[in-house]
Length: 286
Ligand code: PLP
Image (tube, rainbow, N blue to C red; front, top):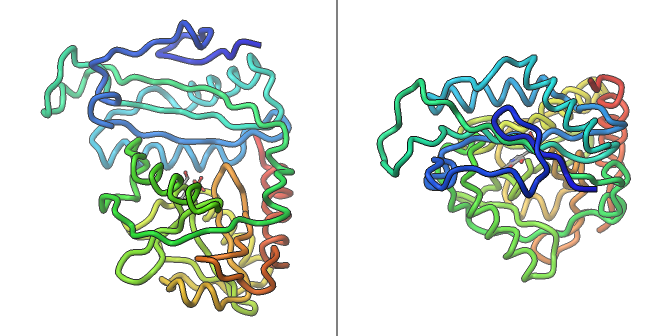
């Protein structure tokens, strides 16, 4: 089946969808994005993703592209047109096409470019990787210092994924000034006894939508939550480690820089939080 994608108000077969070479997303990485997962044909935490989209746009002085209702209707239409049961919807909003290249922002009334497409992943909730866990390496965090804005500047995270691939593992965790910031495309956690430790929200990391929900469910399930930085050594010696993102939900991390974490197998806390997250979010999906 040819995928139907969305570009600036139109639903088109993917090979007919185009964006200008002058689009600032293409030339300057001047754009923001969101990835919302789909389970049972419904959107997971759509409200959270839209709130963060607004924040990213506002931090970059970009106007809202359309109403939240229109965005929701568009996401649902893409799910319907592409018959998605489990998968992801990628949404990108750029500052648009000023018709030429310039470092200066175009006039604020320039129409933004809005692009969205689906990714069909039939076993998203039941991913085999969740049963074995991720193995990660640590690499320096060389990204810019506004990681709280979800921009399309993904070159360094992409290089981080390639470093992991080269090392024969699943992901890289970034380290800055001796402590872990986050994974290439996920937030990072360790578990010690009944306590879940993850870096506090600043501009050092993306404010994960999955993170917010997982920490809420963890607190409700009587876990202690401590928001502070941790080192790779502390993580290697923790009982468990895990990562969260819309694309992986809660993913156990079983090895860091070649050293097993805990038993070297997915731990009970990560497994429980994954189940809790999937159960609760499926109930609340729209
Ligand atoms: N941190 C980074 C750098 C990310 O790219 C992502 C997701 O893409 C996350 C964290 C997790 O965010 P969310 O839970 O909203 O998917």
